[in-house]
Length: 173
Image 1 (cartoon, rainbow, N blue to C red):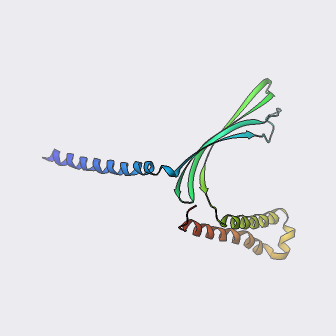
Image 2 (image 1 turned 45 degrees about the vertical axis):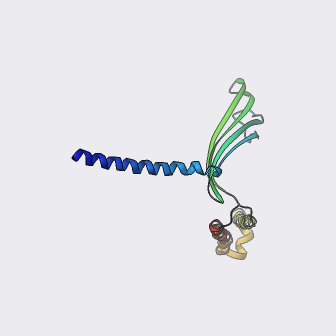
């Protein structure tokens, strides 16, 4: 009698677990239009020398997979590969150098005027910050340290407030 009660409890737990797993895994299967797979080819230009060798223009590509979990927001991950060649490196001739990398992040998609407002606010904040850091004599005598901080922080705070409102809106892209 005791064994049958214990078995019944285990069977009930097993059924609940299987049910939850089915709900978890069937949801992405039914939402296939939310998935995105991208392949890109690329021409790669080296920006530095490697040792005493000059790298030639290379080629490569990347593959990215994304899942759109909100109408305007997606999470993505991917892998990139690039190949460069050189005539001579470390005493050897005709060496190929391969570079691989992984990427991951969030992708925000917008087709509204919000992107132009974001660019404007970012340009204001970045320009003010650049002038304050690299040439403070141009800005600090006129608006002071507090004014400079406001010109950097306020556009970013307004942009974040607008982003939150935009993400909560019901309009889809």
